[in-house]
Amino acid sequence: MGIWPYIGRRLAQSILVLLLVSVATFALAHAVPGDPIETVLGERAAGDPEIRAAAERRYGFDQPVPLQYVYFMRNLFHGDLGESITTRRPVMEDLRQFVPGTIELAIAAMLFAIVVGIPLGIIGAVKQDRWPDHVARFIALIGASVPVFWLGLLALYVFFYKLHWLPGPGRLDTGMQAPERITGMVTVDAALRGEWTVFRSSIAHLILPATVLGSFALGIIARMLRSSLIAALGDDYVRTARAKGLSEQGVVVRHAIRNAMIPTVTVLGLTFAGLLAGAVLTETIFSWPGIGRYSVQAALKLDYPSLLGVTLFVATAYVLVNFIVDLIYGLLDPRIRIA
Image 1 (spheres, rainbow, N blue to C red):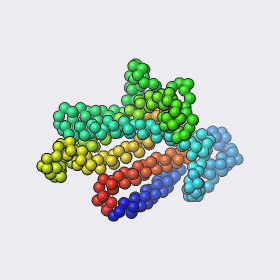
Image 2: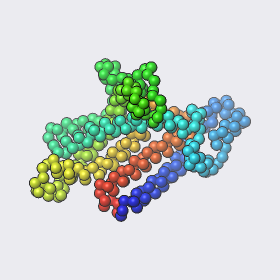
Image 3: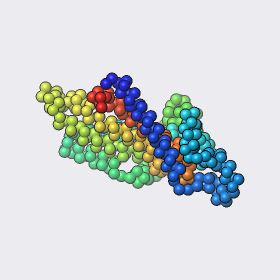
Image 4: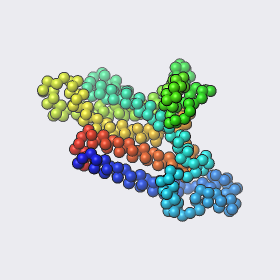
């Protein structure tokens, strides 16, 4: 199968998944016990029929749930996710404010995990059962096992409070003005505006939360790559390459890593999507204004429009990442296009 039919098939599957996610999320959000109108108005005001009816009309709760979903999808195609009950602003505006912070943090965490995790996995496989392998496995095990909240608090205590090597919570130093918004990611905006003092401050503030958030991904990537590479190094084609006189470095780089990266790419994709969805604790500990904290506030107040907006963002991130992973699969191994 050619690459374009393969892309078309995967794209159709992705759209179908997003549609099913929207239906399931909408149904589950409305099945959760509680009264969002009472949360907004208070118990006393919600007991007044006129006030309650006006609030229900404002948020569309006066319509049957199936009809609410139809209106929601119609508005979604026009870029309208409704109005947040919590912030009283359009949900799309809230997402534009909070999503870039989470994306910035997730990208930095993923870069840290890749830069450290992939070399650890390769070292562990090439030096199997020797001391470099034991060290690599120990680091990967620590990264995958230590709870994020504990590691975050420990990192703040050691590197901010005791050693004063890195700044504390927040995205910039106290009193420093964020650059004029372009992407919403402070590091990128500061670089584009040429505000290098702000850029250095944002990078310094990004180091601790990115390291803490990326520690789990580091452990998963290193362990997966090590296992895949050990299996690849034992295959017949690798033994044939060695028999032809190729150096061990050439065997690993030109032959084994290509096949070992196929399962590792899956882990990379799912881990990155997980970082986007699961940064709640890190954002809370480091006072990072992102989608995680926003979603928790929306859940506590039964803010249906915000919950739907966050869920669709996370679902879209997962589907998009998996779509990209499928494309990389097809490039690494053309046989996968036939499946």
